[in-house]
Image (cartoon, rainbow, N blue to C red; front, side, top):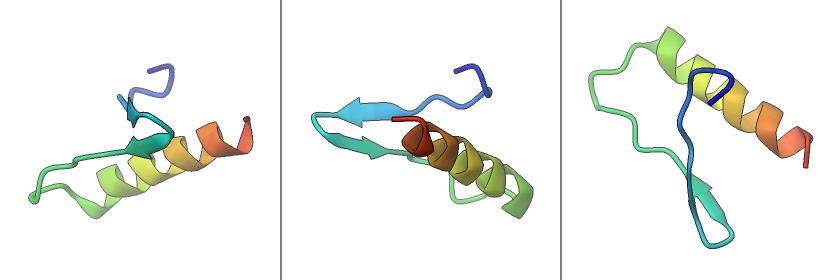
Length: 41
């Protein structure tokens, strides 16, 4: 949430559900937030 992205945990799985009409830049932002989260575990 600090990066403006809501990630949904489901047990030990973390997933996103972006809309089909998402831009490449927005998708890159989501992936960067997910990668940053995983690197800080």
